[in-house]
Length: 287
Image 1 (tube, rainbow, N blue to C red):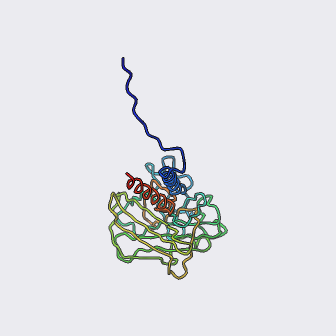
Image 2 (spheres, helix red, strand yellow):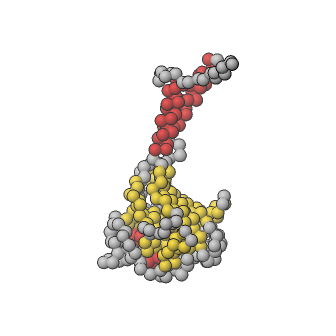
Image 3 (spheres, one colour):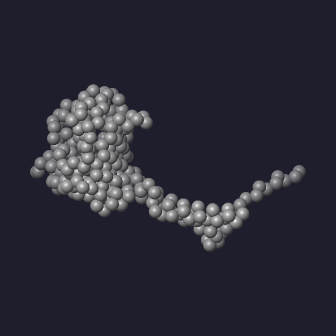
């Protein structure tokens, strides 16, 4: 019986001086640079409860409901904030710290909702962390947050906030980085995807962007920048995700993720692509 014919295979030359291989190696190295700093820091789907999430005060109802976190603050101010901490993460220029979650308001009037990423100098160990001393954790808080309103035109805003706990961690007031009057009517029992990005544009500038949407539709977005905002400082390190709801309202939170997203087009990757393109054109011209 005749033996089956062998398929011809082609491999790259082992000589690194070969221009094709050099270009491919450069491309691979560039791609590795693009992916090396990416990573998930915190991921919580609440299937096993709400461990690590704590109320700023001692009032309100924070619980696990049908595999989601449910929060119903009873009072306004610092006690309306809940938070969970993660490993201290420092952004490099070009990187983005991204918070993604699913938000489901339980009534047709959620009033005001706030999401933030902060750096707390002290560790949260239980409920009441955002109270004034001696009951709270004390220390300092610094970072960014954005709030949006339900079905009103009085404005949504991105802000920078700093100060001692609980002043710096109450997700209220602060330096306005950007605002708009976009109006959208959020519906009860409807799940919306919230994405909150903090991007270190340069050593002297941070941009923030919060979007709220469903499916492929973005219903509302609020952008901010520290560039030109008097009193706004550049924060590069974060260890806390914070959420604040309106007193008397209830929302479900699910599938929380905090991750670092690398710069979209690193110089190394662009250089590698350019090298590969030039080599490819050179080889074609010799054919």
